[in-house]
Image 1 (cartoon, rainbow, N blue to C red):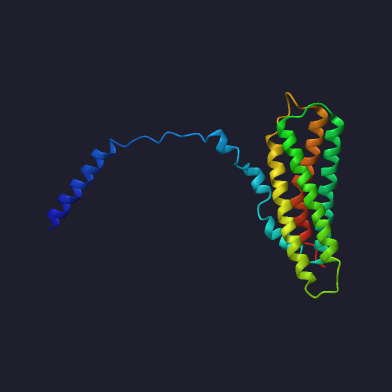
Image 2: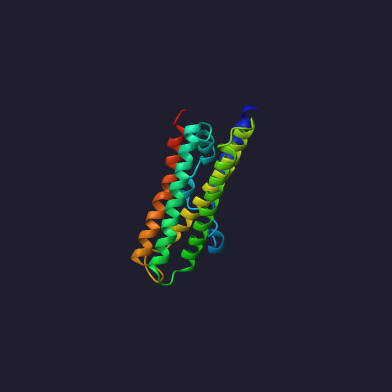
Length: 197
């Protein structure tokens, strides 16, 4: 019996050694098509806005945290309006990518105005016992929408060319300033989360 098991083990080892000579090389790498890759978000952008649901949820639970978040949304609106004004004053032809960014910035301004309406309609009213919960959930939903739009805008900014046709120093400056405020939003809201009332 021992001899049979030993012979079987030796046979398996010899078969494995013979098979090792025929191991195939690594599979050839296939690049992702350009049409598919255009929908993929930049990893740095994705990491910047990672966990925003929990951060927003924490910052909107306290009165001071909510005030701080509303203030940060106001900073985003001011940066957006400044960008839109600067792009008009820069003049000249703009690329299709810049036009898409301008459309996204207009959406952000619209969402932020809705944020302000929710604040005045639900959050500053004290007559209804349920207005606090309505305020919280509507603010949270609006904040998540705004965060997704900001993530989309930052992704568009990363893809913008800084040189070539359709770019200028004036436009690059406006885009840089907008990018600064949009990328600072998550960190500022996170700081709002730590404010206790």
